Image (tube, rainbow over all chains, first blue to last red; front, side, top):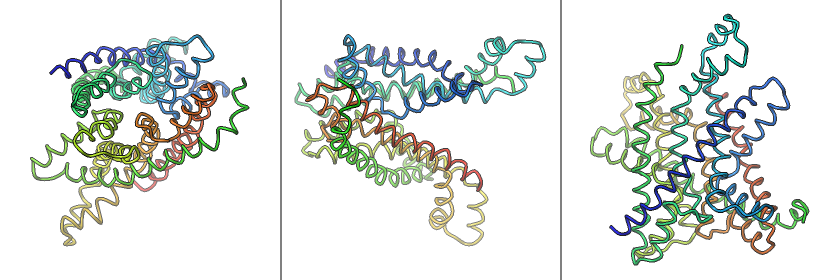
Length: 212
Length: 217
């Protein structure tokens, strides 16, 4: 029971890390998604390359580049900041791809109708297409978020005190090497499965508010 | 201190590390995908107990981070008398994760095979096992190929987690070079690019596979 409570101490950090990274991604993904659809080839190329590079390198390697690599060039970032920046930047790329899917899911007629009403491209995006893209993107974003809860465990390698960090610590201290990890696994499962259910319910409700 | 000038001197060690990473990824896939297929078939079993049990195993397998599975096999199991080398622990852990994830991918593929195929096989007098083996699995597998390639890319990336169990794969090699030269940024960037050099072309492959398969369906 003691071990269980100790491992639980990591939960707020895991959630905080996931939510912060996701928030960065939700905002940062917008310019990347728009850049990908830009009419300027150079901008499009830049956005595509950024997305590919960010997704092509494993998260743990990004954390190391930021924490150990940039640490020697810049004033050293603390582990938590490095982890939030690292996972946040990766999320930008994944969220950009999710928004892209959302953009293509919004019916073409919505663009045409807005244009017929004499709206500018800017306001069509902000008032008509944007809100619908967010709604369509919810299920994909939620499954990404669930993945991110699990991926945030790599932050333990640079010393962020999240769930796996405490599990590892307990495993080394106590006579029971195996138990703490099972508890950690259980905590993740408990966190992720209800998230998956909630997403399905939310998705069904949001779908009703997207024009076909 | 120039970032790029030392790259040639890092290359031999990093390439050796990349070899280990690729090896772990391939072995995990070779063990995990057949495991995933078994789970996928089991999840469609007529026996309710089997079905519930398998779905439970898959959900737990997918809900647990690969890093935790890895730690269970490497740090946890020795306590119960079974000590694995870092290589064996990495392969077993990633194979288990692969089985859990690919079972869902393959289940989707098997379900995409039209019901009429099974009925037609039945009309030809094939039994259930033969129908599964010669009709449903080959077609379902084909549908699943693009997603399987996508997952293979993720598993290749996940081999970097084996750094935590001291397996001399790409990230471990890069980190140990960094800790002797203090030139972390340079060597880690090179390692990152080496990962990307495999994952990015592989993801193009996924797109092509999707296009080609779409022609047959």
